[in-house]
Length: 196
Image 1 (cartoon, rainbow, N blue to C red):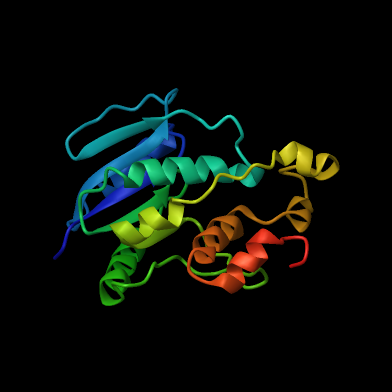
Image 2 (tube, rainbow, N blue to C red; image 1 turned 180 degrees about the vertical axis):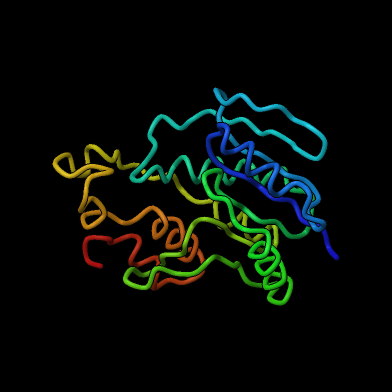
């Protein structure tokens, strides 16, 4: 059984510690890399590495810049051929983790997610991403969003209802930026969001 590194991305609190304890004894886990913020208090331990980053000055619409920075920085410390990037506010059952691991190993050239939100193009469920370390690093090696969420739609800002009806969702932003590097049609959409 090939071991992989898990990257748990996002702010750390008591729930984050619960998630680490939940995942740390999975037999195929090599190490847990916690990619959090400078202000977070969490200790390294046996099989647990902590990567602290400075928060971007602009969190981006839907906190996408936080997601991009902490995911990318954590993935830089992965040492295994395959990795999984998980959120610090989501606890995936051990049965589901095993299914996701098996699917990744059965489809080694793909990036796996928990699914897609069909009403929106390029909208993966961002709770976890699974795949080859280099592919996941490439997924999060994208430009940060220059828009400030309160400037883009001050009347209907996050988290108020309808906010996303005026914006590119954070998950769509990440996936479309990644796909734009691979497909000129997606790049056209990314470069001209008002049209699409």
